Every structure is written in C-alpha cells, then in structure tokens.
Image (cartoon, rainbow, N blue to C red):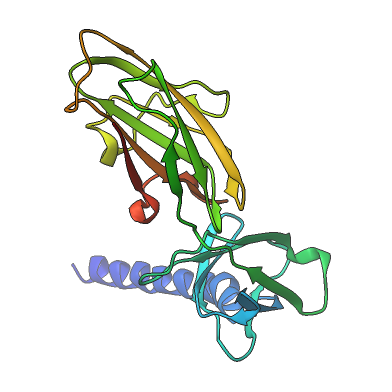
Length: 247
C-alpha cells in the first residue's frame, strides 16, 4: 500500500513538473512578447467640420477594437503590424451618414498613417409624378435628392384593380429575397444607382383589369442600401425609407 502511495505521489510530481516546463518554455514567452504595432490617426469630417462618430477596426477580418473620432483633434490608435486592416464608421444615435471605410496593409508603411473619413449624408428624396393611374398604363416619377441617395431600391404593392406594377428601366433588378420589413409588399427591386444632386425619371408600368377608381393605388417604398466591407450591402436600416403612393 505504501509503495502504491509513493508511486502516485511521484507521478503527480512528474505531471506538475511537465506542466511547469511547458508553461515556462512556450506560454510565458508568448505572453511577454510585445505585439508589434503601427500608429494611425483618425478624423471624420462633414461639411469641413470635425464630427464625432464611431469607428470599428478589423485586423485580418477579425474584430480588433472600436472607438470614437473627436470634434477637436485626430484620434491616435495602434494597430497590429503586418496585418490587413479594415476600418469603417458606424452611425450612433440619430446620425444618418453613409458608412465610410478604408482598407490598407500595415506592412506597407512605417510612419503614422493618416485616415480622413469624408462623411456623406444620407439624403432625402423629393418625388413627383406627371400623370395619374386613370390616364395611362404607366406613370412617370421625377426624383431629386439634395444630398445623396445611394444604391436606391424599391418595393411595390398595389390595389384591387391593378394586376401588377413594375419599374420599366434597366436601373433596377428583381430581388429574389425581400428584406424582412418589406414582406407585405408584392415585389422588391435593388440597384447600384445613386441619386446625387440630379433629377432622375423612373417609369412605373402597370397592368389593370376593370375600371381604376379613386380607391386604387400603387404604393412604392424607396430605400437606400448602405455598404461596408465586412457585412456588404445592408438593407435593414430603415432610417432612409420613403413611402410614395401613386394615385
């Protein structure tokens, strides 16, 4: 019995010694090794004024850290050396800026890299039409934006005497999967077209049966799609949704 106890103690001591050896030889140096970094400075501007907005940093497609720009000076950050870096802005509270982003490799520079995000405001749409549902089998929508309305998309629904309605233009492509918040619409379309300080005409064609009256309509929900390099196109931000009803 004594021999067995002694053997167990010896084995236990040997296991502790082996664990200590592995820790000292491999893990401890790794913990003490300093991460080599490069410095970057970050500012965000809108209308030539510094803006406070959140930024998010990814290194080799993995989340690294986040922070906020400052309204008085540049923010300094350390990012890992020899990495593929993606940094992009993210709205908070009631901000309506499009995401701005920068992609670079930290092995390509030695000095502090200066990053300037020139923010672009998510603009509104002014919409008017040149004719009504009772006149023809189409309506022409005139749209303008004082700022920028990026990657415009639309979802359409219609009333009883309308069989179908659709945009007659090469700008829009049919979306096979509708965004969740537009599930009650009959069809949705997206595009990579941006309305920027210009006038755009969109022809909406429709087929009808019976007599179209004052209760009939075509409802069109316009939405702007945002983009950043991590998530790609995003359809779920409803702050830019604009509903227009054709009568």
